[in-house]
Image 1: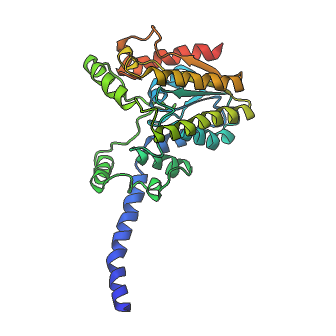
Image 2: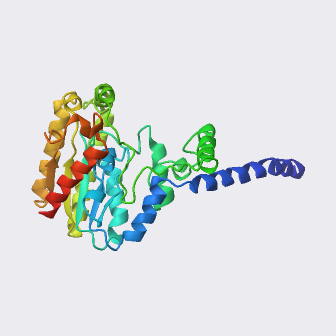
Image 3: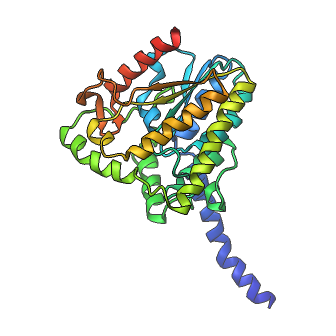
Length: 307
């Protein structure tokens, strides 16, 4: 038996060492999470305005055009339950935080990153920001978040070609959605609207509705305890996309915000979804602003915050 166990150990030990080495090497690749954590640590004593939410504010609000004391911590596919956890994690280490800008979307109430097809994104919260989100151990590992072939490709991209995974600027805003493409605008309107339309009668959606409503309430309540002003923002989207989103979803989002405003009269809501100042050339796809659109949106928001 001892001989058998020895052989087993000799077989698995090199494999374990290789896996640990791969995990370490993957964690050393610069990405949005570790880059933004470094920037946040560097500027945490001066940040007065924090941007949170999903990919819409991540790509659509660039603090570079607001002021040096604004930082964007929004993330692709982030849902309100995670945004609430991020705020809870960050609020005590940002002593000068005065304003919280939270991006909302027509689908914010109906899904959670914790239960979706993109749970691999949870590793960024756990590994690089020392949070505890997600239900499974693989949410804490780089190597378990992608297939082996994908991880090999990531390692080669960085270590052989010096290509990092950072897609944001020093202010935390996403900067890869740069250009305008008319064909892409047309095609993504239907695709995105379909992805963002939910069966409001289903049990799963009902459960998420309860979870996300509570998360938004928690965001407002926690901010109020720290005397932080909260601004919910609905960012611009192409009319070809907006018209395909069910009216019931739009109405429910507005109702939830109005209910929260009754509880906290300081809560502000800015709806830029159909703002005529935004034209097709301001969009990367049907529901995301490109770089020039983000500059315009950020300048508008900066003026509003200043007043």
